[in-house]
Amino acid sequence: MSMHCPKCHGTMRTYDRSGVHIEQCENCRGIFLDYGELETLSRIESQYAQQHYAPPPAPHGPAWGSHHHGHHHGHHDRGFLGMLFSS
Image (cartoon, rainbow, N blue to C red):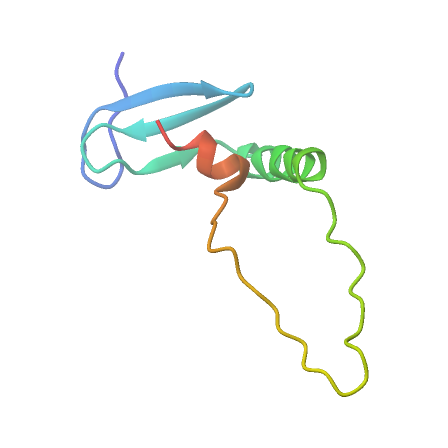
């Protein structure tokens, strides 16, 4: 029995990601979660972030009279949820 999207009535496809069943519409690409799955994904995201991202080093204040110039690497990491929904 196939499920149909509540938004556009397209066919839903089920994916298993880290033990969580995610339904995605093949037509509108909408993602639908069952009760409690968003909380599970949030917990997995938090655990992933703790394992893969070290806390930033403590900032050292600028020397007296000098200007502090920060920099931005321009690299945007998508994190666990970005990887989870990338396919």
